[in-house]
Length: 118
Image (cartoon, rainbow, N blue to C red; front, side):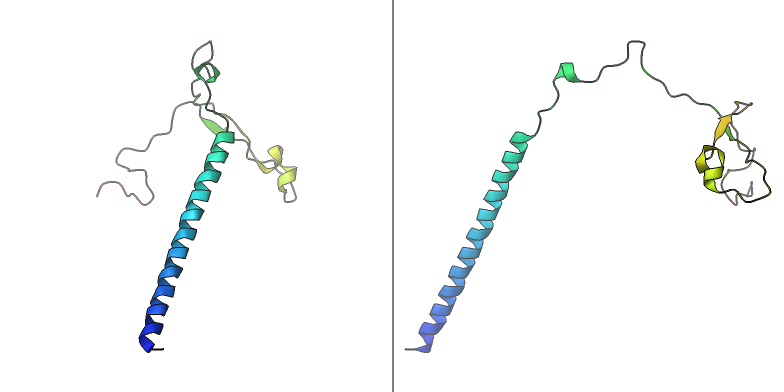
């Protein structure tokens, strides 16, 4: 047997291996497509127009804007833990007496370090 025949056989085996690997990849892609189609068939269909949410009879609900201010922390001789505070550590608030929105001073950009003009 000649060395040329072993080269040809090695190339042929490599070619066959690549074809088999390609067929495996194609099979996996087809299987993934089939599984995806089955899952999609089992999923609920989109809602019909009569099942869509409706606007309330008294009109659309609007956002309520109001200025809030924090409640005072109760005074005590010892340090309070969150479960001893009103609202269990969540900062309670109440409606502010002034409902005017705070505005920046003239000449100030409002950002930190903004020294005004210049």
